[in-house]
Amino acid sequence: MDKALLVGSRVVIADQPLASSVYNKGSFGVFDGGKLYLSLEEALYLKEKRNLEIFDSTGKRMTNKRILNEFEKKEKGFAKRFIVFKLMRNEGYILKTALKYGGDFRVYNKGEKPGKEHAEWILKVYDQGESIKFKDFSALNRVVHSVKKKLLIAVVDDENSATFYEVDWKAI
Image 1 (cartoon, rainbow, N blue to C red):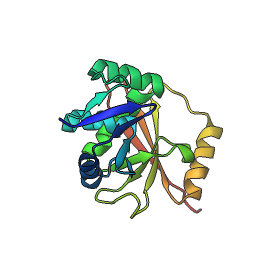
Image 2: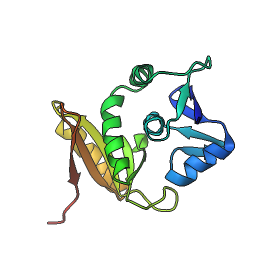
Image 3: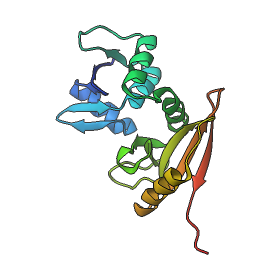
Image 4: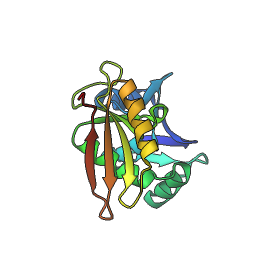
C-alpha cells in the first residue's frame, strides 16, 4: 500500500523509493530531499489511480469523504479544479500549479516533462455560472502572454464536465 501524509496544503510521500518512482513515472509533485511533495489535486488523483492512502497528522487514514472536505477547506474551489485536473491528466497532459501567474495550473503538452520543456498554457478554472470581469480577464491574459504562454480557460458545468477555451493573441 502506497502511503502519504497530509501536511498543511501538501501531501508528502516520505518513502524515497516510492517517491522517486511516482515522480519519475508521472511527473507528479516536487521531489526534494528524498521526499515527494504533491499538490492536493495530484494526491487525490494518485489516490484514485494508484490507491495512494492519505493519512492525517495523527496517523489516521483519511476516507474519501474526509479528504474531499479537508481539501476543499484548504483550497476553495478544489472540487472544480480537480474535475479539470483529472480530465486533463487522463488525456496525458501534465499539470502543475500556476499561482504566480494568476492561473490554477501550468499545462504541459503530452509527453513533455516539467523542468525540461516549458508549459504551453496557463489554465484558469471557472464555474459555469461564474462571471468574469473584463479587467481581470485582461490582466490574466497579459500576464500569460508576457511569459509566452497561451491562456486556457475551463468552464465546469453542473454535470461535472468541462468546456475548454484557448485564448491567444493575434496581430492585426
